[in-house]
Image (cartoon, rainbow, N blue to C red):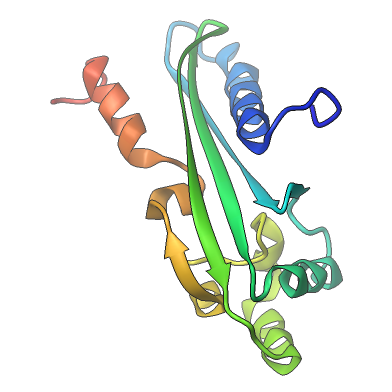
Length: 159
């Protein structure tokens, strides 16, 4: 997608749709929800780190800088996309010492490999930041409030 000139929002949306489409064949006639997130910093996209060392490299790159978490959610039914939404949150990491980084990595454990930014705001990762602009659910990986609004509009949830 990068070679075609796609931006982070387009990538997140395509990944969310692909996840939903993969599951829709197992659930005919029902809404299937897919979501995904892309971390973008200065035009570069970052994946979930594979190792603790890669997580440390990512965090050293992010510290003292602002990155974007672009999160998309998509709803499909019977192989057709019927709704989508993309939101972006801006997160500024504070400048922290290498000693803090080492302590953070040791305490956070393997969970950091499950997050695109090598942090979880609902836990120890909150200490990495000096400023956060954006919806909390978006940062967690699912723009929940717009999704709930869609589901109420469609009669899936009571209004």
